[in-house]
Image (tube, rainbow, N blue to C red; front, side):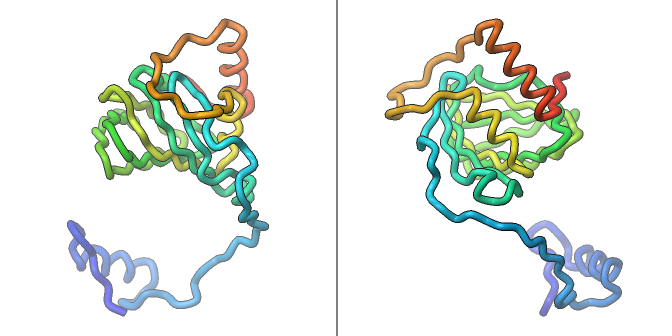
Length: 192
């Protein structure tokens, strides 16, 4: 097997990394660690779409299906539906933009994401995003997947997709308290 650095990464850098890790120029064989978990591959029982923050989302893969390894959601949100800067202590997130533009800040670095762009937001580092266009459609990968339950708890099932998105409305004081309690006490998310 040949080792190639791929676009933008010199072969010598990648080869050096393999030599450092494995002591040779060849890729290791049979060096995999497998985690045995019961995975459920079945049709989702949840309603396909749920309203959230003036837009909606759908569950592509739930944590129940993956033994909580991850969850995968597709969001369609209007500008203004973004959360404040926050730090996840339990999960990493990745964002893949299908339509629109997001300005994502991780730590002190801001990156503009457009259709086809993807970005990883690691746990323990503050991140936030702003929807730059009127709306954005993006896939959110959450690992591990338990945070999916937050989105289910604070959304409502939709019978049909809305024709237009609405500006997000501020939640009632009671709902805001419940949302903050869940994010901080259940999911250990800290807001800056």
